[in-house]
Length: 283
Image (cartoon, rainbow, N blue to C red; front, side):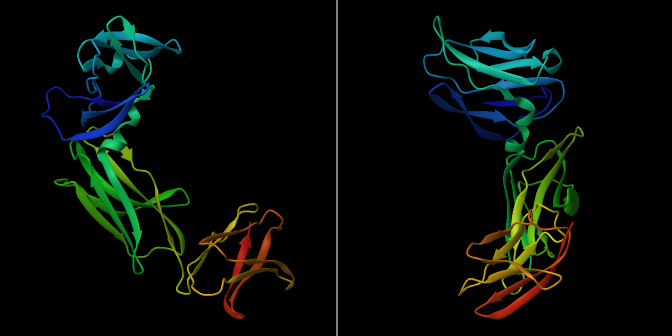
């Protein structure tokens, strides 16, 4: 089911399609993509043989009947709701059908505004592509790169006239790179996309991260090399070999739980030849 905030003075925006399940009956609802802060419009597709529908909301910690309607549209002021959770059940004559899952309507915006967001590794860059389900009410779009919980802007678009947008990260880091979309609506609300992750190997086909690494956090090694599996050997600063691991997968891990805080050397070899030696700091 799709729950939409509706401004009755605005023109209709484009549509999106989201699933809803009434027990074993699965249908699709087409909902108008709009957002204001006063009224809420619930819209679902008619179910065969249903004579009416019962709307539920959360009151005093339990699902309670809010209203019954023969229509597939229901309007309500947000201020009359105690919580942000709603559900609907069909009525077949005198028999009540299975109630839908309760859904927080405040979480429904992302799926309608952001239809698809992808991040793809290229030649020394990452291509970001965004397809909107609707551009109605969007004031600004931002492509962001996230590192250590902090976001930096890669591109900002204020004149939103289409539904397809692209951006580029021309300087991705070796290892994991994280990206997201930030949408600012005309009423000041902000919607974020899910975070997309891209793995970037070094020029030798390997990537080691994070570095420094927190004690107990695994060291990840990305292997895109062809041929014989590379070997990762971890040494302490006295030259004592602590561990040797064959990099048999795309993403490999080295456990640091048994280490002590300090400096280590990670030696990467293939077919007896040294590819690289990296200094690893365990915090």
